[in-house]
Length: 183
View 1 (spheres, one colour):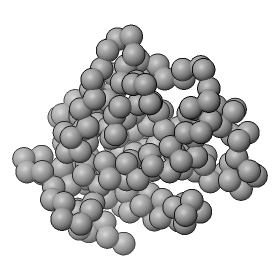
View 2 (spheres, rainbow, N blue to C red):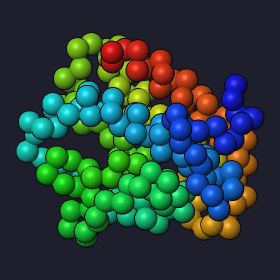
View 3 (cartoon, rainbow, N blue to C red):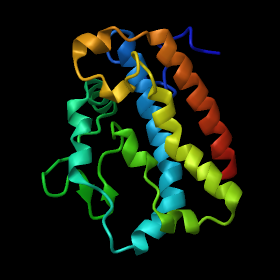
View 4 (cartoon, rainbow, N blue to C red):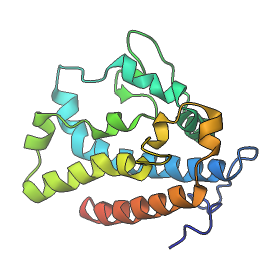
């Protein structure tokens, strides 16, 4: 496993931002993982969402992207600074404008129409696994708190980088396996 190398770039030529220590490199990896997972989610869910008149996004959910120090670091690294409004959150005409740094619930939510649109039980299970990928990666990051629920920089600094790196390794391996099914 690559969890020993906390500064491993998430993509070729990318470098971890300076000034946030090992968390910067982990935020970089998390952002890359989130963007890769997002591409698959859009492929699987986009046709259903595009045909649906209901808006599932809740503006109050977007606030965590700004309130969570870790998600703020993810947004800063990835350059994902979408506009936010109390009425729309980060929602634009084509969906969420925030490429990275979304709360895990944004990835996890799958309506019945999306699940029903999957061709079989195996496809539904893969989509559910994909939807929970970031939730699993950040579970119990510090005590019982999820990574994005650690709401102060002081508590975030107590995070064990090697533990999160190992979780990101597992998530990257699982995502690579899921990506093979969407080719």
